[in-house]
Image (tube, rainbow, N blue to C red; front, side, top):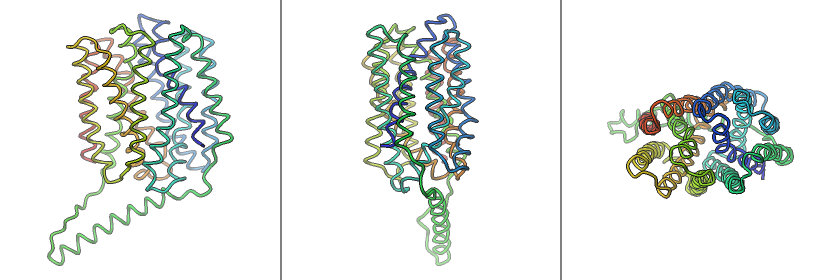
Length: 396
């Protein structure tokens, strides 16, 4: 039940994710792509130190609920302030502040999952959390679809997003509690060290007695894992940041259908989260990351072929977005569990920092390439970057 407040927050985020780019287009049609790129990049860049700071503070104080409350209440206020202006530069400033305070609930949420459940249940618990809250994101997209079909999107979307975050704040007061004891991540770190030492002793013993060791003595490359996270996030944001504008401007897709396409993307994520929760297995996480990066790259290239050669097919684009959502959900579950395992206490925000770092560059690069060279180049760069993320995860 403690996750219920996060569902309402995700409802607001889902609605805002499609509405805000389209809202910028109505305010400044000529420079919309550049405005969206600057807004997204500035916001994500500022979220990088914020994520690290919030993660450090919550681990240092060992209080998590207060930062989740701060985040939800602040977002409700900022989204209300959005309704008071249509100046693009003021909206960029507000969105930057929004991003900093949004980051306040992410590291505490990850720590809550890691400390409330044993390591063997992390994948299952992260999957259930992400699947449950993704239903909220999907509901937000469906709300956007309903409002757009009624012609009410521009008038009701921002007040509704503000109200949903206020509801998340109220529910969190009653449903979320800090862990009584905080030791699970420390135990996992000790376990990994002992396993590594034990494997080394086993290999040396077999060599001394003339046996050929069947184990490999190789430590995880954390730097490669971090690079993989950045590159995967970079590729994702490069294509998804300008995508609503691409659908609206280049393919002339109605706003209601854009919400439907994103709803299918979210549906794929929900399905993957619950499948991952039922079939979680630590042994397949690393190899699965490589396969996910390759498949994502293939889907991006297929999207380019669909748009360039087959003109426009709503069904094919819907299938591609569904599968991309499915793969991203698996990626998020596996990387979240691995990050909680390999990153030390006090660095709970590092995962969000790395994701934000890639997102910051992608949020600017995507709209910039689309504006200067066309969307085909944006899609191409995204697909190649996914291949680089595959290489990084392979090294890890």
